[in-house]
Length: 91
Length: 195
Image 1 (cartoon, rainbow over the protein chains, first blue to last red):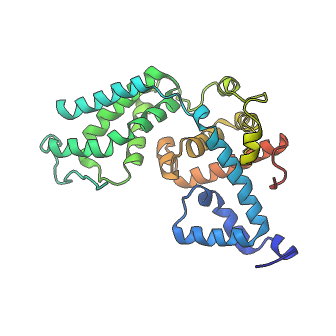
Image 2: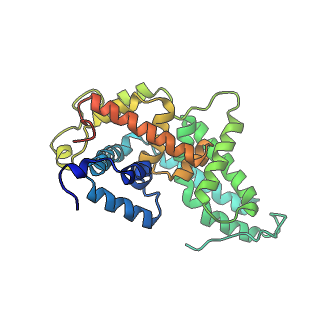
Image 3: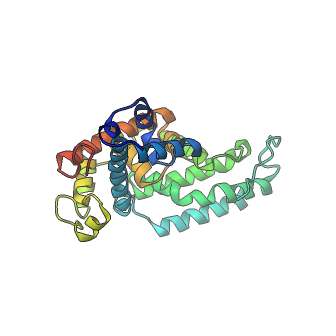
């Protein structure tokens, strides 16, 4: 664990982590790589703050999802389900 | 759930219709809601969306004998996109239409809205600021953010829906989030990467 100014230095590892930060936030990284990123974020104040910022933005968008998603239409879904079921018996 | 794969050796899809029906039930029916939501994103019209999903279902059913059972969502979203392109050649498809009207209708945009103690407790950024910053993004940037962060699509699925490489999804998403962050900083809700 580093302390003080060393934590805020931009290291080569920081560059690699920044390149995959989005994929890490979105759960798109393989498990071993995700663990390495998480370990770096816990150790590096600068990258940790960066990750927290984007995590906040992502969480805020997710919380708004009911407003930002296309409106659900249960009747349309029922009709589509019946249409799909008919397909399997009629073709 | 185990994969149901139609025997690829079956050249004529009508020969093993029981197998095809089972594959359709396993791979396609669970994605009906997602297909409808994405059709709404593509068409912005309830009737067009329903027609688009119907056409997509027919195409998917007929193409099942060529489907290997892997990544059904990606496969279906590709069919949805291609079907939409074929249907909408006369008019340019849009993913987010009249966005300023859409966003201004939403609670919290341009007002105190639901901002309050609960959001503070959760460390959330106020809704109005998020919606404002989102509305200021370019259409491409807003679309990729909505597909990944709101609709929950994986990169591969977003790539298939938009007809672009996964690498382009990643770079576009990164630029979109940077722009969103800048917009939030300008609104005073994020400060230079710190809270």
